[in-house]
Structures are given as C-alpha cells and as structure tokens.
Length: 265
Image (cartoon, rainbow, N blue to C red; front, top):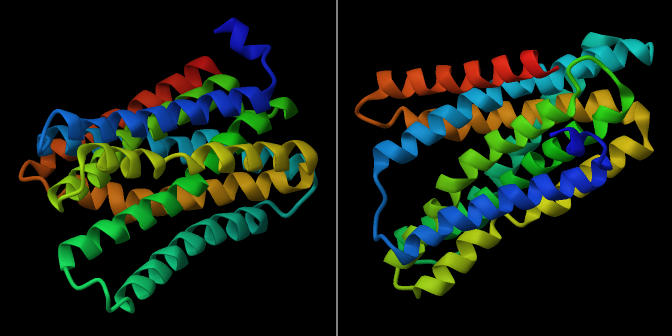
C-alpha cells in the first residue's frame, strides 16, 4: 500500500479505472456460465455498493470539496450547490435523452430488445461520471486536503467496481436471451464499462491542471453518484422480496466505507 502512495495520481487513476472496467468484464462473463444469475446475490451487491457510494460521496468527495473551497476563499455552500446539482441534473438529462431517443426509434419493435439497447446506452453513459469521480478523487490527493487521500480514492474505486459486476451481467444476460452469441453478449456488456478509463483520465487531468475546478468537480461527482444510487441501485435492490435485508446490506456498505475512510485518513 505504501508503494501506491508514491505513484503519480494519473497512473493510479488509470489503474483504478482499469480495475473497475475489469470487474465489468467479469460480470459480463457470467453469460458463459449461466443463463441467469441469483437475484439475491445481485441485489445484495447493489445494496452494499449503494452504501459505499453514499459514504464516498460525502467522506471522499463533498468533505474535501468543502475544505478546498475554503482554502480558495470561495463561497462554500454555493460551490457545492452548483457542482452537486449539476452532477445530478446531467445524469437526469442523460436518462431523459436516452428514453426519448429510443422511444422514437420505430424500427425497434420488440420491447425486450428495446430495453436491452436502452440499458446498454444508460449504463455506458452513467459510467462516465463514475470514472470521472475516480479520476477526481485521485487527482485531489496532491493538494493535501482533509479527506482527499489515496486510501479513500482506492475504496471509492472498489465501491464503484462492486456495482460494475451486476451492471456487466445486467447487459450481457438479456442480450444472450435475445439470441446474441455468448461472445457478443459478453463483448457488449464489457465494453459498457470501458468509458470509465477515459473519463477517469479526463477527471484527474482537469483537477491537476485547473486547481480552481477541484471543489466543483468533487461536488459534481458526488451529485452524479447520489443520483445513480437513488435512481438505480437502491430501487433495484429494494425490488427484492427481502427488502429489509437489502437495506441492511446498504448500511453495511456505508459503514465499511466510513470506517476505512476515517481510519486510513
């Protein structure tokens, strides 16, 4: 772990986003072994990931954004409001855009296939701010602000990686059921996560080159992540018959992230 502390944040961001992409590939590879995957397992993973991402949004993103805004003599509440709201709003607009785009395509007659295509587009677009969040988290470590640590960025990447596993399988399995070959289903499922590598690189470069943007980017990433949690992760995990148990998994995920972030900061 000490070796990682001496590695350039850009390299660390590339390693971390490559890891999350690999987890997407791993989830997508389920198509080679199963026609379906246990829903309880997937929902538990989503619940844990939701908790991790909620905790990371504050401890690894918003809290450092507050400290950075103070050090730059900015209006703290205004910076966080702009960044956080913008992050959530852009994800909302992406959802509206993809829904409108696909509903206007009359050639897609089969509803299940239409849902598959919408899922691919939606997950791919949502992976962009997730990758950026990782890049921003690693880039912010060079400024020595409270909460912005390599350990916290690593845990954030792990949390995003966890929820990438069910995302990969959520794309590949339905495509396989629609008649695509196992390899093509795996390929489409895996490639939905590759954008995280590029968006992570953009995030870390922006932070390193334009310091003034850091508190905005941190709060932007937090807003985008909270939107994903509220819109996708929690509703999906709560669709389980044991929704009370899934809620506990969310609390466990939050607790893990909170303990690691505080203990390792």
